[in-house]
Length: 512
Image (cartoon, rainbow, N blue to C red; front, side, top):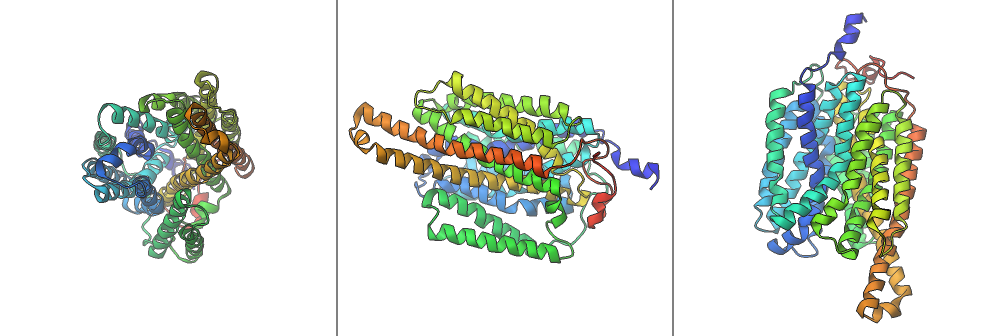
């Protein structure tokens, strides 16, 4: 290969920084939408007459469509063009949000949430893969992924703040309508400034069996964990969903190993470093999603914070994530191996989580919760940034969309598992505490209320111990599996548009 041919793929897109603004805006919209509706749900439930049994579907419909369709959305972005998928995803998300904001009943609301999830599954992998192919310089890529990682990590907390403000001072419908200006600005800006990178499309025919098996398998898995939270782990349908997901996903892996043009080439998943990223990131998200839930309830129910005050109480975590991602991760990413950022990052987050195991009814926010959130944010921000970059590093451009989709899939599945698993652990510990203190609880009055509050906090602390262990496991996996050296030269994806496994080897992108 000539020198010119070797360096051609490194030509930087002149509009890449403008594009980053619109990509970041779209990512913020998708991530905050996962939590913004949580705070508005009680008001929406009352207005629309949604039963207690069905209210979880407002959250679940979004999670199922998003988690189930991500791999399909990633491959569509590879085939159709990332810019096209990104813009169509934004427009569809805006229309679905308008439908949700205008909902006049349960069916319309649930349909809108499912549509939001479906268009989010097209939009999210297109956004990440655009970054992967547009930023080719190592230092610039570090900065770009630092910004993206901060948004991916902190967007959920931003959603809590925005959701609290809109619900308390305007109306729950604005938690949907707020997406429309985000989407319009991002879509118009992206259409004007983003150029589709040359030679990056996957022209292979679509793997229909792979689409069906992956979508149904992921939907069964996400729904199994979601149902376990409300119906219990031994519920017949819960068990059926888990068995079905194992069978469907095993069949998916078998099909992908046999077909000529797989939906998810196993080389994307089985490459040691990317596999380490997907696994460690998924586990870390399990811990984080559970914590969002517990801290929200603790601050509102036990401490009596308003929705807005609760949202602002998460600011230290956001500040920590932004600092960890843009100031620590981005500055060190070109100097040290990714595992030396991810391993210690997850471990620092575990230390922050460890502080929260000391939660009591009378715990001080400034003395305990604030420093714990800062450590969590710093650790997760530092780890998220190289994880987002490494997830697409060295992958064939024709597979960039589906590799990006795997990052989002690990986060979505991790979120569903975290909410169900940790909530079940907390509920069991709370029940056990109430059983041990049945006499005091039955007494009623202030003493009985205190026992109820102490039981809730006991449950949260028990679940948070599990979250500490999960984050420690994330750190160990990152340090053990991820073995690339310091990023040096080359782009985040390999050159050429070849579709074979050896296409990943055309440009040496990592210096060992």
